[in-house]
Length: 113
Image (cartoon, rainbow, N blue to C red):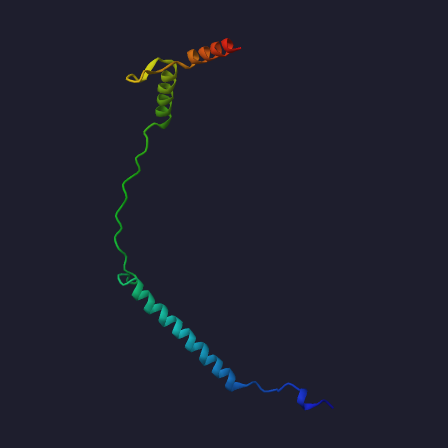
């Protein structure tokens, strides 16, 4: 037959199981109580179920016709690239049309060779 010293007991240790269950309940209640008290301490003005009236944000300021505005801005940019003008008249800095500036640049590069 088998040796009784190496045999598992058939009975469950009920006392240990009850103590473990009681310890788990105590830990659960401690964590829940600490959470409740901490929540009240950190957020004293917050009440469960009470909602504060939030201000309604203003409606978005949308462009009435974004495509037309884009075309107008692009037209202004093109006109600025094709026209002469002063950037800083006091310092003598002028804006030159792009085509004229390219011609001048090519002419200067040709003279340098």
